[in-house]
Image 1 (cartoon, rainbow, N blue to C red):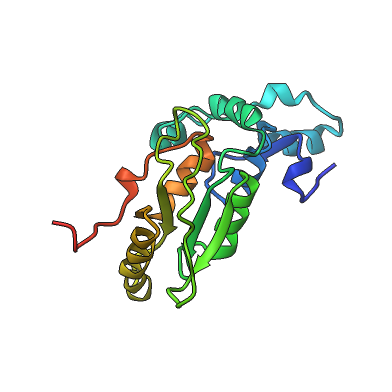
Image 2 (cartoon, helix red, strand yellow):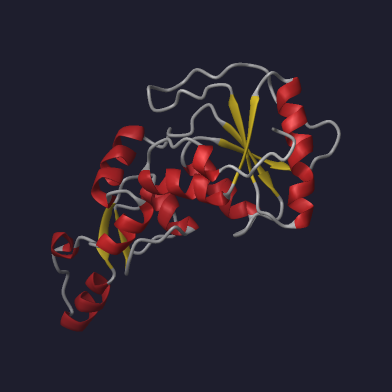
Length: 201
């Protein structure tokens, strides 16, 4: 049965590893990930074949994204859709791929997504987050996912000021940060994904 709801997905069929909303949302639920040739072959032979003969292998993408798909799937099973639990992640409106896609990915992994437009009244909690383990030491960090278009860049200093006023550490990062976390199913530091703060010497 083909279903659109990733939370009910037992098998995910794809031609290769993709950092798309559908792929990442499904991965959070730890399905068996198979090559989409499985579907074609079942239709051609008019019988249900063994999906275990079609486990997706994509070494090129694993090398590109610095992870192992099966290990990510095992971590997803352990995470139980709580990888981002306790984290509020802000997102600029014009982030590449659309804010709705990032909201879906964040929520599929147990986090909360808040659109950030730099308007007065937006607040960041000063509450310290309890780190979920040794892989999440940055309990005081707060993240804004943003592109580098002019309207988004204008938000950066407002966000950083707001975070510092709440005694939090602002991290303005590219969308790759979240995509790589959701794909690998493990927390990654924002350092290598962070947009520079020109006011920091």
